[in-house]
Image 1: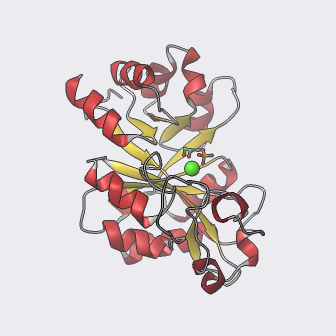
Image 2 (image 1 turned 90 degrees about the vertical axis):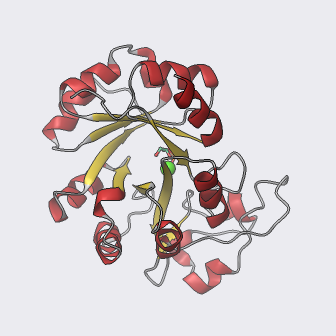
Length: 247
Ligand code: G3P
Ligand code: CA
Protein backbone atom coordinates (compact mmCIF):
# COMPACT_ATOMS: atom_id res chain seq x y z
CA UNK A 1 0.00 0.00 0.00
CA UNK A 2 1.32 3.41 -0.93
CA UNK A 3 0.46 6.45 1.13
CA UNK A 4 -1.59 8.51 -1.33
CA UNK A 5 -3.20 10.83 1.19
CA UNK A 6 -0.04 12.41 2.55
CA UNK A 7 0.96 12.53 6.20
CA UNK A 8 -1.81 13.41 8.63
CA UNK A 9 -1.22 15.32 11.85
CA UNK A 10 -2.83 13.93 14.98
CA UNK A 11 -2.62 15.96 18.17
CA UNK A 12 -1.27 13.77 20.98
CA UNK A 13 -3.66 13.93 23.97
CA UNK A 14 -4.98 16.98 22.09
CA UNK A 15 -2.64 19.92 21.52
CA UNK A 16 -1.00 18.96 24.79
CA UNK A 17 2.02 21.20 24.25
CA UNK A 18 -0.32 24.18 24.72
CA UNK A 19 -3.18 23.07 26.98
CA UNK A 20 -3.57 20.38 29.65
CA UNK A 21 -3.50 16.94 28.03
CA UNK A 22 -6.70 15.03 27.29
CA UNK A 23 -9.00 17.97 28.07
CA UNK A 24 -11.66 19.63 25.93
CA UNK A 25 -9.41 22.71 25.89
CA UNK A 26 -6.58 20.67 24.31
CA UNK A 27 -8.91 19.12 21.73
CA UNK A 28 -10.38 22.54 20.82
CA UNK A 29 -6.87 23.89 20.37
CA UNK A 30 -6.00 20.97 18.07
CA UNK A 31 -8.98 21.80 15.89
CA UNK A 32 -8.02 25.48 15.83
CA UNK A 33 -4.49 24.52 14.79
CA UNK A 34 -5.98 22.54 11.89
CA UNK A 35 -4.79 19.13 13.04
CA UNK A 36 -6.30 16.29 11.02
CA UNK A 37 -7.06 14.36 14.16
CA UNK A 38 -6.56 13.87 17.88
CA UNK A 39 -5.19 11.02 19.92
CA UNK A 40 -6.64 10.37 23.38
CA UNK A 41 -6.61 7.77 26.15
CA UNK A 42 -9.73 6.08 27.55
CA UNK A 43 -10.40 4.32 30.84
CA UNK A 44 -13.46 3.43 32.90
CA UNK A 45 -14.66 5.00 36.14
CA UNK A 46 -15.91 3.06 39.17
CA UNK A 47 -19.45 3.55 37.85
CA UNK A 48 -18.54 2.35 34.37
CA UNK A 49 -18.25 5.67 32.47
CA UNK A 50 -15.72 6.17 29.67
CA UNK A 51 -13.30 8.92 30.65
CA UNK A 52 -10.37 10.48 28.84
CA UNK A 53 -7.20 10.43 30.93
CA UNK A 54 -3.74 9.00 30.35
CA UNK A 55 -2.38 7.70 33.67
CA UNK A 56 -4.11 4.94 35.61
CA UNK A 57 -4.02 7.27 38.61
CA UNK A 58 -5.13 10.88 38.92
CA UNK A 59 -1.98 11.87 40.85
CA UNK A 60 0.18 13.55 38.21
CA UNK A 61 -2.47 15.63 36.47
CA UNK A 62 -4.58 16.62 39.48
CA UNK A 63 -2.26 16.56 42.48
CA UNK A 64 -4.82 14.31 44.20
CA UNK A 65 -4.36 10.59 44.80
CA UNK A 66 -5.88 7.33 43.61
CA UNK A 67 -6.74 5.12 40.68
CA UNK A 68 -9.22 6.32 38.04
CA UNK A 69 -11.06 3.00 38.47
CA UNK A 70 -11.79 3.86 42.12
CA UNK A 71 -13.45 7.22 41.38
CA UNK A 72 -17.04 7.74 40.21
CA UNK A 73 -17.52 10.14 37.33
CA UNK A 74 -18.99 12.73 39.70
CA UNK A 75 -15.91 12.50 41.93
CA UNK A 76 -13.52 12.75 38.97
CA UNK A 77 -15.33 15.80 37.64
CA UNK A 78 -14.41 17.71 40.81
CA UNK A 79 -10.68 17.41 40.05
CA UNK A 80 -8.72 20.16 38.38
CA UNK A 81 -6.44 18.47 35.83
CA UNK A 82 -4.32 21.51 34.99
CA UNK A 83 -2.03 20.91 37.97
CA UNK A 84 0.76 19.36 35.89
CA UNK A 85 0.91 22.46 33.67
CA UNK A 86 1.64 25.41 35.97
CA UNK A 87 1.84 27.79 32.99
CA UNK A 88 -1.87 27.15 32.32
CA UNK A 89 -3.86 29.30 34.72
CA UNK A 90 -7.39 27.94 34.12
CA UNK A 91 -9.00 24.93 35.74
CA UNK A 92 -9.74 21.99 33.46
CA UNK A 93 -11.79 18.83 33.97
CA UNK A 94 -11.48 15.22 32.86
CA UNK A 95 -13.84 14.83 29.89
CA UNK A 96 -15.97 11.81 29.14
CA UNK A 97 -15.47 10.24 25.71
CA UNK A 98 -19.04 11.29 25.01
CA UNK A 99 -18.12 14.94 25.61
CA UNK A 100 -15.16 14.68 23.23
CA UNK A 101 -17.31 13.10 20.51
CA UNK A 102 -19.90 15.80 21.03
CA UNK A 103 -17.22 18.49 20.71
CA UNK A 104 -15.76 17.06 17.49
CA UNK A 105 -18.83 15.55 15.85
CA UNK A 106 -19.30 18.41 13.40
CA UNK A 107 -15.68 18.43 12.29
CA UNK A 108 -13.94 16.00 9.96
CA UNK A 109 -11.26 15.16 12.48
CA UNK A 110 -10.03 11.62 13.03
CA UNK A 111 -10.14 10.38 16.62
CA UNK A 112 -7.48 7.87 17.66
CA UNK A 113 -8.74 6.18 20.81
CA UNK A 114 -6.05 4.48 22.83
CA UNK A 115 -7.59 1.68 24.91
CA UNK A 116 -5.79 1.93 28.26
CA UNK A 117 -6.08 -1.70 29.20
CA UNK A 118 -2.70 -1.95 30.88
CA UNK A 119 -1.83 -2.11 34.57
CA UNK A 120 -5.57 -1.88 35.20
CA UNK A 121 -7.66 -4.21 33.04
CA UNK A 122 -11.10 -2.79 32.26
CA UNK A 123 -13.83 -5.32 31.57
CA UNK A 124 -15.91 -4.42 28.50
CA UNK A 125 -13.81 -1.36 27.61
CA UNK A 126 -13.90 -2.33 23.94
CA UNK A 127 -17.66 -2.95 23.97
CA UNK A 128 -18.39 0.39 25.61
CA UNK A 129 -16.16 2.31 23.20
CA UNK A 130 -17.74 0.58 20.23
CA UNK A 131 -21.27 1.32 21.48
CA UNK A 132 -20.48 5.03 21.73
CA UNK A 133 -18.83 5.10 18.30
CA UNK A 134 -21.95 3.47 16.86
CA UNK A 135 -24.25 5.86 18.73
CA UNK A 136 -22.43 8.80 17.09
CA UNK A 137 -22.19 6.97 13.76
CA UNK A 138 -18.49 7.82 13.64
CA UNK A 139 -16.87 4.51 12.65
CA UNK A 140 -15.19 5.99 9.58
CA UNK A 141 -13.44 8.63 11.70
CA UNK A 142 -12.09 6.38 14.45
CA UNK A 143 -8.82 4.50 14.90
CA UNK A 144 -8.35 2.34 18.00
CA UNK A 145 -4.90 1.54 19.31
CA UNK A 146 -3.45 -0.15 22.36
CA UNK A 147 -0.25 -1.48 23.88
CA UNK A 148 -2.48 -4.35 24.96
CA UNK A 149 -2.69 -6.27 21.71
CA UNK A 150 -5.30 -8.65 23.13
CA UNK A 151 -7.57 -5.67 23.63
CA UNK A 152 -7.14 -4.76 19.94
CA UNK A 153 -7.88 -8.33 18.85
CA UNK A 154 -11.06 -8.21 20.99
CA UNK A 155 -12.10 -4.95 19.34
CA UNK A 156 -11.49 -6.37 15.85
CA UNK A 157 -13.59 -9.41 16.75
CA UNK A 158 -16.45 -7.20 17.95
CA UNK A 159 -16.21 -4.96 14.90
CA UNK A 160 -14.06 -6.07 11.96
CA UNK A 161 -14.58 -2.65 10.33
CA UNK A 162 -13.04 -0.78 13.26
CA UNK A 163 -9.62 0.38 12.11
CA UNK A 164 -7.07 -0.75 14.66
CA UNK A 165 -3.37 -0.25 15.28
CA UNK A 166 -0.84 -1.93 17.53
CA UNK A 167 1.16 0.31 19.82
CA UNK A 168 4.76 -0.74 20.40
CA UNK A 169 6.96 0.36 23.25
CA UNK A 170 9.55 -2.38 22.76
CA UNK A 171 11.45 -3.31 19.65
CA UNK A 172 10.10 -6.59 18.30
CA UNK A 173 11.33 -8.63 15.36
CA UNK A 174 9.31 -8.03 12.21
CA UNK A 175 6.38 -6.00 13.60
CA UNK A 176 4.71 -5.76 10.16
CA UNK A 177 4.52 -9.53 9.84
CA UNK A 178 3.20 -9.84 13.41
CA UNK A 179 0.55 -7.13 12.82
CA UNK A 180 -0.69 -8.70 9.60
CA UNK A 181 -1.02 -12.04 11.40
CA UNK A 182 -3.30 -10.29 13.92
CA UNK A 183 -5.33 -8.79 11.03
CA UNK A 184 -4.97 -5.22 12.24
CA UNK A 185 -4.68 -2.14 10.04
CA UNK A 186 -1.71 -0.19 11.35
CA UNK A 187 1.47 -0.04 13.34
CA UNK A 188 1.81 2.68 15.97
CA UNK A 189 5.55 2.73 16.66
CA UNK A 190 7.46 5.14 18.89
CA UNK A 191 9.88 7.44 17.07
CA UNK A 192 12.90 5.36 18.15
CA UNK A 193 11.66 2.52 15.96
CA UNK A 194 12.55 4.76 13.02
CA UNK A 195 16.16 3.69 13.47
CA UNK A 196 15.02 1.04 11.02
CA UNK A 197 14.91 3.29 7.96
CA UNK A 198 12.66 0.86 6.12
CA UNK A 199 10.09 0.53 8.90
CA UNK A 200 7.39 2.50 7.09
CA UNK A 201 8.03 0.83 3.72
CA UNK A 202 7.79 -2.57 5.39
CA UNK A 203 4.43 -1.60 6.95
CA UNK A 204 3.13 -0.31 3.62
CA UNK A 205 4.40 -3.46 1.92
CA UNK A 206 2.03 -5.48 4.08
CA UNK A 207 -0.90 -3.12 3.55
CA UNK A 208 -0.51 -1.54 6.98
CA UNK A 209 -0.49 2.13 7.86
CA UNK A 210 2.20 3.64 10.05
CA UNK A 211 1.20 6.16 12.70
CA UNK A 212 4.27 7.31 14.62
CA UNK A 213 4.39 8.87 18.13
CA UNK A 214 5.37 11.11 19.87
CA UNK A 215 6.93 13.31 17.23
CA UNK A 216 7.82 16.65 18.77
CA UNK A 217 11.07 17.57 17.02
CA UNK A 218 10.99 19.40 13.68
CA UNK A 219 13.69 17.21 12.13
CA UNK A 220 11.73 14.08 13.05
CA UNK A 221 8.54 15.53 11.58
CA UNK A 222 10.34 16.35 8.33
CA UNK A 223 11.92 12.91 8.11
CA UNK A 224 8.59 11.18 8.69
CA UNK A 225 6.81 13.26 6.07
CA UNK A 226 9.59 12.32 3.64
CA UNK A 227 9.28 8.65 4.60
CA UNK A 228 5.52 8.87 3.92
CA UNK A 229 4.33 8.06 7.44
CA UNK A 230 0.55 8.00 7.40
CA UNK A 231 0.25 10.05 10.57
CA UNK A 232 2.50 11.79 13.01
CA UNK A 233 1.18 12.03 16.53
CA UNK A 234 2.52 15.18 18.19
CA UNK A 235 2.05 17.54 21.12
CA UNK A 236 2.65 20.46 18.70
CA UNK A 237 0.18 20.06 15.83
CA UNK A 238 0.68 23.65 14.61
CA UNK A 239 4.36 22.97 13.87
CA UNK A 240 3.60 19.65 12.17
CA UNK A 241 0.79 21.15 10.06
CA UNK A 242 3.21 23.81 8.80
CA UNK A 243 5.85 21.20 7.94
CA UNK A 244 3.35 19.01 6.07
CA UNK A 245 2.07 22.09 4.18
CA UNK A 246 5.55 23.09 3.06
CA UNK A 247 6.79 19.59 2.19
O1 G3P B 1 -0.82 6.64 21.03
C1 G3P B 1 0.48 7.10 21.04
C2 G3P B 1 0.96 7.41 22.43
O2 G3P B 1 -0.03 8.17 23.07
C3 G3P B 1 1.26 6.20 23.25
O3 G3P B 1 1.89 6.48 24.43
O4 G3P B 1 2.02 6.85 26.82
O5 G3P B 1 1.49 8.76 25.35
O6 G3P B 1 -0.18 6.97 25.75
P1 G3P B 1 1.28 7.31 25.63
CA1 CA C 1 -1.92 7.66 24.33
